[in-house]
Amino acid sequence: MHLSKLHSFWRIIKTYGPFSYFEVIKDPMDLSTMAAKLEEGMYKDRFAFQADFQLMIANAKTYNMPESFVHSESVALETAFEKRMLVFLLSYPCTQRYGL
Image (tube, rainbow, N blue to C red; front, top):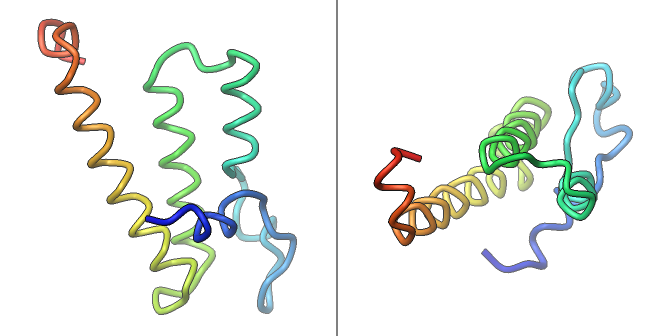
């Protein structure tokens, strides 16, 4: 996935369509928030980071119609993330030893 397609996930939009984002999504997450949390050392482990990423993707799929650009890009981003995470996990011996 090219980085130029990530702009839809960088900041949360306020309104789109008939409903406000915050009327539909009660626990918002975006890449800029994740970047700030990463920079501040707020992620204790990869599971917390992964949970925020999955929340962002779930929010995008919930708020946007299945045939929309953002929905389809969220599916593509999720697939790319899962592939990269798998490569990461398999490349470190400790992840295999401890089942991480």
